[in-house]
Amino acid sequence: MKGVLAYIRYKLAGQLFILPALVIMIVFIVLPVIWGVIISFTDMSLVGPKAMRLDFVGLLNYVKLLTDPDFYNSIRVSFFFTIFSALIGQAILGLILAILLRMRGIKGGGLVALAVFIAWVIPEVVAGYVWGAYASKEGLFNMLLSYLGFEPVNWLFRRPLETIIIANIWRGTAFSMILFSAALEGIPKFIYEAAEIDGASGWQRFRYVTLPLISYAILIDFILITIWTFSVFTMVFVMTGGGPGGATELWTIFAYKRSLLPPYEIGYATAAVNIMFIIVLALIIVYLRLISKFKI
Amino acid sequence: MIKAKGRIIQLTIIYLVLIVTFIYFASPLLWLIFSAFDPEASVEFKVPKNITMKWFLALVEPIGGAYAEVTPIMWIINSLIIAFSTAVLVTILSIMGGYSLSRYRFRGQSALLNAFVILRLMPPMVVAIPIVIIYAKIGLLNTYLGIVIVLTALILPFTLLIADGYFKSIPIEYEEAAMIDGCSRFRAFVKVTLPLALPGIVTIWLMSFVIAWGEFLMPLVILRSPYMYPASVGIYYWFGAYGRVEYGRISAFSLVYSIPTIVVFLVTRRYLTKGIAGLVTR
Image (cartoon, rainbow over all chains, first blue to last red; front, side):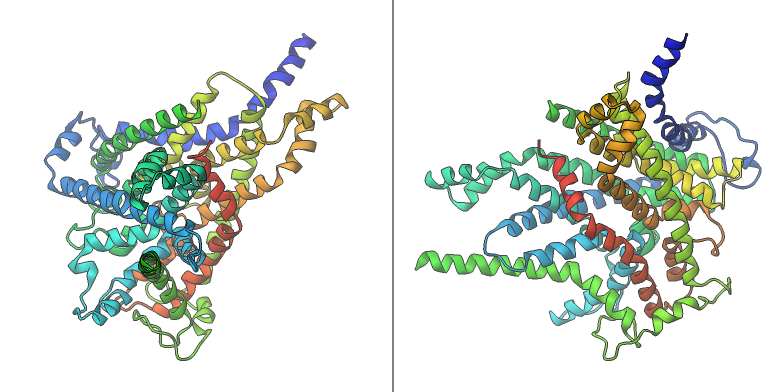
């Protein structure tokens, strides 16, 4: 008996130390997610009679979503936002910066990297506030353009989607830049020397040496920034609140407005969230597959 | 000669790209700094003619409007309470969890680590809406406890992975030596490995502090009273509250609010860069 107790203390006690963390994560993340799935099959509302007495409505919320132009609009905005600000903007700019900053004899690169880095780490609300001011009619963006002879306009009204895309490239490029810098660092120098001896031009060296060697980093970068950008809420919410007229209403903003502001349709909004979560989940699983392959 | 000319063109293009990029990234930050010190602060970008501290001093004064006694400095204190409590809780739980993960092998361990990755990458909005319903039922709505717990739950998947990795990087032989000298397994960990892991533990504390400090969505959905807002929701509320935006004061406030974050990230920059590099290098 004593031996068993000692065994438990030696072998099991240490494993139990993770329990408090697990309990908190299960109760405050996993259960809410499951609860979100359940209420998406009900007509729950945040206020009124449907807050207390709710009925199961089956797939009604999901069926309704399929015919909701506002939902389709939010999907369209989210996809545009993600493709242009993450896959095109952040990834390409990040790669260009990573290459330029690694070149020998280029001065001032550290300062550029610092500005990119700070844009990434300041609180998201501050980023939203700054860009809300920056893109307004009297903001710096227009000042710069007026030197080129353009009339000042309020960019958040005239070109809202483009503006939040540019703002989010500003916000997120640092991650891609750091990731690609690390990937480039890992390429042995002699490969370039060999390519140069063989007479490869700068472009050829990039196309046939660099790109294939960092293809894994590019894939990882694409998946992660797609997940993060697709989940963005705060910065755009602070800048535009989803307006004007739904032009910048990402799915996160759509869900927030529908559930926690009038008409308080919690069941309906969680159905929309769940559909989007499935998309993100698929990406996360691809990511897990990739990193587990890479480790072997 | 031709080669030199090509080099000059190349350098011109490179510096042009760098300068444009620098303007793109630095100018919004410069506007924030300038307008915080400019007595005539406005949405316009201008180098201040005079420098004033009045916007910073005015942060102790009420913001005006419907909630007469709400001051910006109150929001900073609220943020401190939330971020500090969250960071302490996260750090303790991460050390405990990291000990189990790194010093024991149990069934389902790799599945657990994968689950952490899923939780870490999940859109926070998936949790935000149901948590409001649950909190309304169990009375955690409009409380700091509710925010601290949900933030802890959201940050843990990230910091547990850090703790696991950090503890594993410290050779277990040190602990074994201590055990031969008569320490229990747990004491050996506390006496030998924990002090060695101090840089990692500090990093976990700092990271969870700034994540909680910057968090917007959870306090937005959980809190109702502007008296209880943290700085993040405060800025949003203040920015959108009235027709005329007080740019000087909001900029000064945003700057004060951003400084701890910037300092922490600059301090941990190398560690962070190494962590990101770890994603793509063996």
